[in-house]
Length: 437
Image (cartoon, rainbow, N blue to C red; front, side):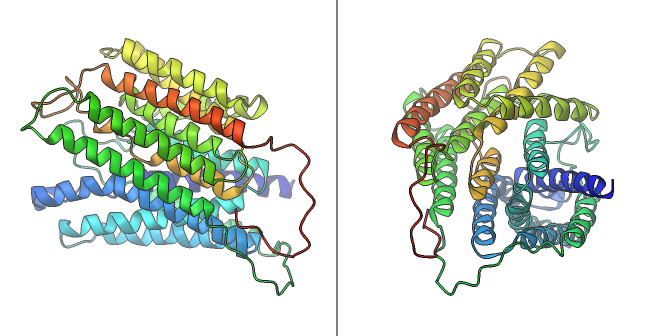
């Protein structure tokens, strides 16, 4: 009975830790003091969000690789506790800053600690199916829920009045649970090799995260700059096509750098982010987080029981079609349908990825919080203030459909070029070392 309770605590810890890390990568630390700052500083804080998410994802994958390669299982829990504690201290400092000009720096510190938490917790949680489920559910659910504005009870009239994201009570709870996890696993040090043969660091996942993050970020900022160029309004289909091609190529390169077919998770994540951005923000009351959790868990369970990446991409194509067919929808039914489609599909994609290497899973979940070129499109009737160069309301859905279709082609290439992961492996080499994958 005691063991069952302890395992349940581990699942809750993995869930909450992944949620806290995801929110730290997804949202700025605060906008509370923007009234005291200049427009330049406000723009700098806003621009730090996608850049910070990219940094956080790279940090997460790097930490996951280092712990997986060199450390014992307990190290993942210890480093995750340190990352959560760093987040708490940073948020405490953020509530007491003397100048709003420091917020951008605090946000970058936030995403670094969030990346440490996400990567280290992944190495610990992904060792068991139950904690892996909680870890994936935490990251995926709060990706679906979006900006948490209604959950944090923010004023609709003052969207800049965000107190802190994630809130300190959430980070504090994660810190306590991770401390309990460290205490529970302190005697489970795991195997330790006495070999004196040097161990090679597998840099391929780190390189994959860097390539994917930097190219997607550059494409997003470049496309946004094209639309901001009011001196040359007009047709931007060529610029959109270039950004779409860059996104798909980056996803394919990152997928091919990962071992085996672990790149499936990257392709599904890139497709999922574009699809979610095409649906846009759906206002949700605070209590809907429980419905989001339940539907995401249902989709995750279905993906684990009957994984099919191609079926996941087909479902995403269906959601993108809904996004541009009902692009002008603005009623309760539209938001409910969009939320249900996105939550179930997100869960199924996370379950269908099934990576075999821990850092690959961390990369796939971290990629959910990257920017997308769809977010760079100023859509008519939705972007304020209006610009001289606006995209049609159906453009995000069409762009997302092209990205998902391109990732489906990339998935076919991955399946063709990589052998089936369940085939009989080659005999192990006599040298006692880890291959550079």
